[in-house]
Image (cartoon, rainbow over all chains, first blue to last red; front, side, top):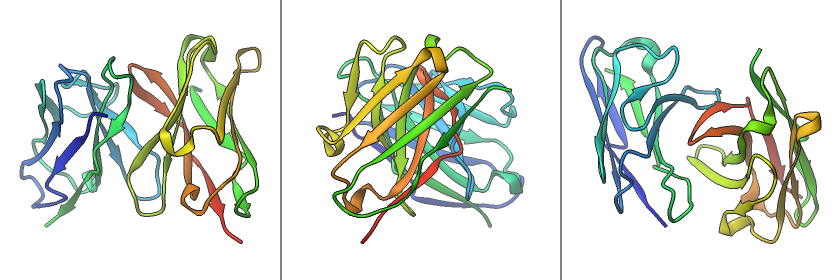
Length: 109
Length: 116
């Protein structure tokens, strides 16, 4: 099973500052990596897929990068509405599995 | 409107069964693989099961294998999850999710509580 490790567990960032979230896969997943945002009491929402492609309607301040085993989600200028838990998820073809990281909670400092 | 709406959650005793349903609207369910993903209270996301777009293949996470059954009726645009021999650690919000490689559309979730 591919294990996804996210860091840090919690990130406190001042409004307008940059937030950088990391995700590591236990084996190469090329760019089969997605990021999701989950606000309290809501279902997760797709932000990024293919490691770097923004989903429809996602603001440009969200960007993804990486390949292989190391990935990053960057929020270029944190807004109050970005307070949420962010999950990375791999969808590699083999082994046929879908696994999530444990999440990074983003707070406003 | 493109959406997924789950139903069927509730409180159930350990060892009993429950059936969840998911109704798709605004798109053709038959074009997509569909998943169930769950989230225990205060915890992260856990993949549960997948069914191919045509129902030809089904796969399950180890904790639910042999107890849960995923199915679909493309003519009715519905997805189901039959859960049996329920345990306390099955308590979670269950999400119906559309797959396009990644998970691009989520339902609002339905809460299943397993408790005596």
